[in-house]
Image 1: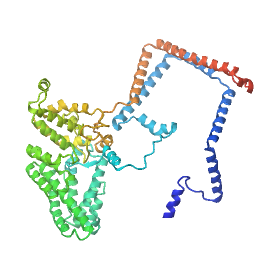
Image 2 (image 1 turned 180 degrees about the vertical axis):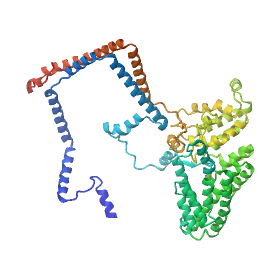
Image 3 (image 1 turned 30 degrees about the vertical axis):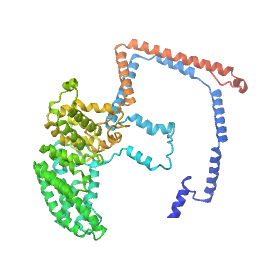
Length: 582
């Protein structure tokens, strides 16, 4: 292996070696010739030879451009109005098609198709790839850390309040005929299931082996069939009940029944794993898997209780779960708790949760920032009036509320359009991108009712949210309270959200040049076609006048070139007689 890798690295500069000795000698001669041709004096000789050859061709080849221009003038003088009308209509139609396609491509992908083709295909042919400056060999620890902090990462997170596939997503598809989940989103969920619900010891249990294959299946019916097979092998397979609850149950009540069976089986397996987790690393991995299953089942049971109206029971289950597994805070169970407490209108409890999780050292989310803004807006929104505030100024409480709204808008600027119902909502995806449109959809889908419940909260948001953008004129370069807004959110959101949803883009992109150009060309050609149809004789005279104005300078230039060539010393030295200008 070492020898093969060494030969491969050594031959990296010249590619694969020749297969025979004759070819090897020819290959070496070619390499010598190529190295000699790369020297500066060889390049100078080649450039001089090319220049002499070009000059010789210019002097020897007959030039009949003036005859061609004269023929064009005669041809244009014989054209009828119908030709000009057909020409302008065809030009307007083609440019209109290009404009429509450019507009569609920009709305769907956020880029101009012509610019994209020019950058990716034409630029390497014309000017070659732009050479970027080489990266420095090493950085200091401080520079590396600061650059890592200043570079926001577009990480996709599991949606804490994601819906049930069988009971909610599938029902939406049956009613509307639209697929609410993208393939990318479902593929991420399949990876999550394989990470949370499988381990290395699954091969020792036939039911877990079947479920390991089930999580990899793309077809929902195949997954459900595999879950039933696993239950036939082991009636206490908790992950099989989880799959049936998520995908086969068509109502929340049915899903809750499956999850209760999964809870019973999961608790029994979890206790067995606790007793023997210290025996080997395999048993420790199995305990982690069983813990994940138990936490997932309890969380989904709490969400079932919340959807069925048993909100206090759901709150108790979530609190108990957070106390029992305090180290699993990355699952963001507190966001489920916040939403349930807001439904109970227990605002003091909401403030207590925020005091714990709205900390500078913890990652933020739209639920944290906008819930904090909602609580501060609740204190002043009922009596807030824009006219009164502009006349007497803002009070301290109103300033705090406005600052909280600005903070929330800076973190995720897409949310206000959904809360103010300026954009239509869709079902939230199973994964979200923090600070992106997918997170805004997920937040507004569950929290819009809480904003509507507090009188004046949406009015205060409507009057103040746009003021955030005056504090961050260049959001991609510098933020006010958070890191600069990541530029990769649009691409990731288009992968997470369904195609029928219009993705919100921030900051708003300007229309590409080619959309303006094709729109102007289409309008100008259509105007010429209309004028040619209404005033055919006048437009023919106008066209002939235009061509008559443009062609004489070319003819004069050719005559001037003719005089220069005939009077040049090259003509007398070389005896050139082939240059012909009639």
